[in-house]
Length: 240
Image 1 (cartoon, rainbow, N blue to C red):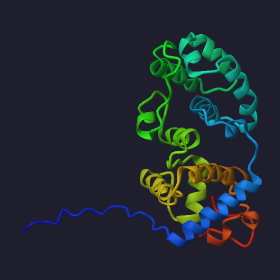
Image 2 (cartoon, one colour):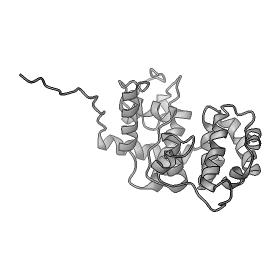
Image 3 (spheres, one colour):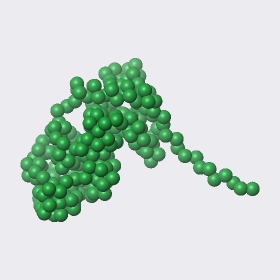
Image 4 (tube, rainbow, N blue to C red):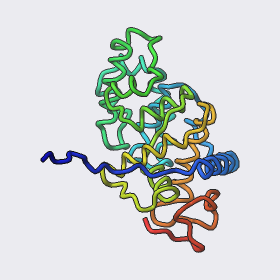
């Protein structure tokens, strides 16, 4: 008698196609009316976007706005970072904390630009190639590919994970490995058809999580996607 070796695998949450399309339309329309004017949203330069994404990790937006411009004045290009001594890069990062981000940026710059000797070298556009570089994880790779090169690439940070869980999969525990994987699956499945629309879509997801669907209070009464949200309540509060 042979035993069955079938294994139980966690099923991916099903995203209704019509709900996903409605979510995307409402989300992007809201973003066009309500988006904050942030300096890194005015550029498609991959290096500048990378700097902003690294700075925004674990740091408030209001603090990054000032330091972002200062850092780019000191190091206008990726090659400038690659030529600099590590101490100079660290000094320019002072006050932002989590200094491993600055060290990784310096390592990346030296690798991509051959120590600053290849000033025309650029960051790759493919998320897989980006992830091979120092300090770049899945989120940052998706952000650079999407925001710099308008690639059709998904990204999931804390804000995006919270929004997608509440809207499409309220029972999923996003703090587990399987739950995190499910949220990435959702993010990929609801991407718009074009990279250009994806740029707006990804920016809008993060903006919604930062301004409306926040960790402490989900402001359902003013949420643009409440009609398709599986967690929406008549009042303002939704369980984290």
